[in-house]
Image 1 (cartoon, rainbow, N blue to C red):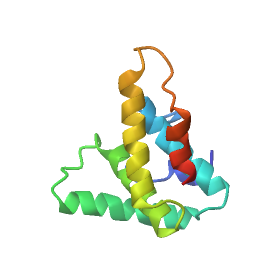
Image 2: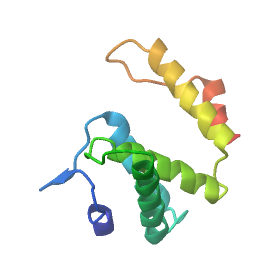
Image 3: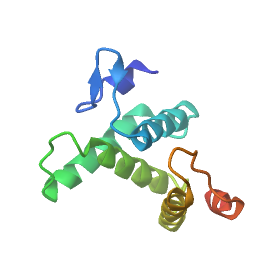
Image 4: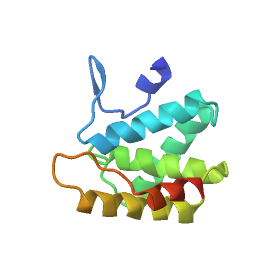
Length: 124
């Protein structure tokens, strides 16, 4: 992992690196690093998007206790993907609902999987 990822202000981490309270947080983190490593945005662009997402949330009354950090992370990722023309708001919204539907129909302990028509949303 790039050292820059561990240098982000507010990143929940311990001596071994980032820590996550839920699997979706680790997935959002990994997606961001993967997209950066593929050259879709610079680390400076990412840090700016995350800072802006945190500032927006604080401006809306987020007490910044650390428990909402990855919500800001996801907001920043979605905002950056839209700004770069990599995904539309409609596509991101449809994928969010597809994952919610997939989670609801998946028995506890099983891997959540999208149906083929739901996966096609990511390519639209």
